[in-house]
Length: 274
Image (cartoon, rainbow, N blue to C red; front, side, top):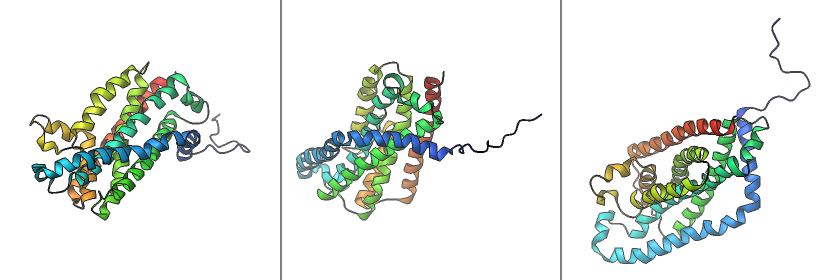
């Protein structure tokens, strides 16, 4: 006799996948409501410090020299600000994807508590990534407002740099989630930042055009997701976007998001499902 697959009368219906993801997201939001004050100061001071020191301080020296020709004739502040917007999104994603993920797996075990409910591994992963996207949106919004205040925005297209910055951060987050899930302790994070995040921050077109790099390094910069975020954000802020290049940049970043998610789902399953 075949068993019936119909839901038992009187029991609540099983929530769908989207609702489960939102439940995981709601946990991180509830936690953030208790801790947001600690990050709000740095969220505002970082763009102020970056733009004041690099854009106005160093920028005055660059603008007085012959280097503006290599910047396309724009001031150094206008050149560097959108690059810093994308680079800050990468850094924010890296910080949100390292210690919080390891803590949820190894130390505080929030993920294990979530999996004791109807949430699945994919829901836990997607919900946390959704929270990272929320944090990226807040950081990028504040940075964009500071850019406007500093006069570093030359086009209404700059408003689209906000989703581009979020996408740039998300191009890194799933892959770092996957990496964090494989670690037994936090020693690997020092290597990640020293040999990954910092070099990409310095050599992906944030501070100078990548065509000024040695010939062998320029193609390496093109492969890095940050360069695509920097280049597209800069085109939008300066009002010089091209549909073709924009589609290439967005498509490449989305490829990193999708690929990182697939790998993260596997490493999360291995780390959390015994």
